[in-house]
Length: 215
Ligand SMILES: [Mg+2]
Image (tube, rainbow, N blue to C red; front, side):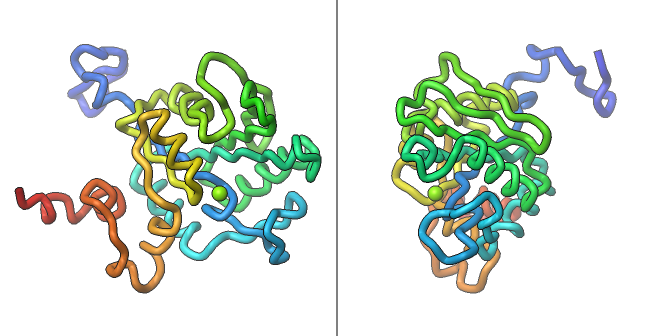
């Protein structure tokens, strides 16, 4: 048993309760959410052909400083479409992790079948499978796997993406969802003109908690 602040003990689930001990997790989609093609093509052309989208670096840093664990989940169907090799897709995720050093883990789902995915860090890459649901978004597999990896729960997890299949994956996994352009816009001029619900606003602006709870 390890004392935390003299009050709670690690491993005492009953006393701490699930909500207290579970990790707050944010999962980002990659393309058009964190990065876009540097060369201006619609699809990323090579592992280093990635430019950080305006507001993305500030958003990631802010969430990191607020104590969230952060990961990435990217479909990478271009592998099965033979637009890129698996090795190139792994290097591409690794370069994205290099661009966002506080993000430890990226998953890619290169198969249309969704039966497996790859878990990538700066130094490792391993194929993963198992009973998580389809790994290819809109399937929930990558989100379910990351929640298990980081010991989080759907109610403690946000998924951030730009596509309908991202929102569907979040719905299927039971996590919360917010559109990537809203998250990035928080760090750019004009945020106050965007439409967000109360939960999304509290996620982006925790210091406002309570202000909008008028009922
Ligand atoms: Mg995307």
